[in-house]
Image (cartoon, rainbow, N blue to C red):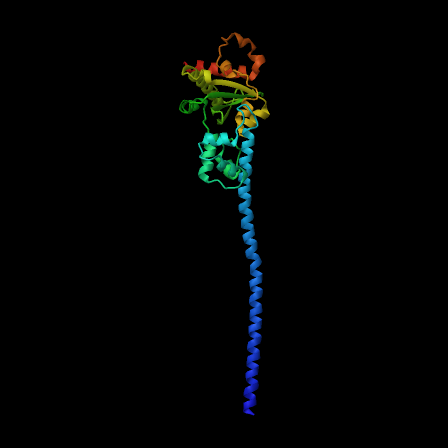
Length: 292
């Protein structure tokens, strides 16, 4: 009898052990399967994120090339021409970057942006605008040292055709590179004491440029508010706006004629509006006051 008890007891233990093994194997499988989709999903999200960033960089590359070629005033900026300007060993490198076959290094992006006056923050992260350069001085005369250092091919004084006649400065360093002096001033009497000082500063800048051999490099443009904003904000390649109408508009030079000595001065009101006349009066008054 004892032998039978032992036998059946052994069978019970074996069956119980088998049931435990089956149950825990199944349980482990369920845990494994439940975790596997999560791992796959995480990997997929990572790949999508990586692809999206590279794709966006490629799109920005293509966008800036489109902007630079919007105007054909320089015969177009082909990839071969851009590579030559950058002094690259191979055209194919730029070609692969522009179509997304290869991801450019940060060093290359920095060189590309520096060469063509492109906003590095926009190129790498899509922040701000393509040609928005942070190049800020408070008073116009403060840009003189920069102009002397950079020796630009041309200096453009950009004026808005509006009631308060906003204006700013653009420096052309090469056919493919412009620098926007990122500060707007008002050419009117809608200014306080600081604005009045800035008008005098602008007058002094023109005088200094004229006296130091930069006069032949200076040009003027008067733009509609829409074009003025696009150029100032860096939404367009500067040459597109500046060369749209190549006729010089020497408002900047006429502005220095505060005593109306130029024969054309009788037409200032018709040409530039009352705000221009008022701004001239402010400069004349300020200069007379500073004599005493």
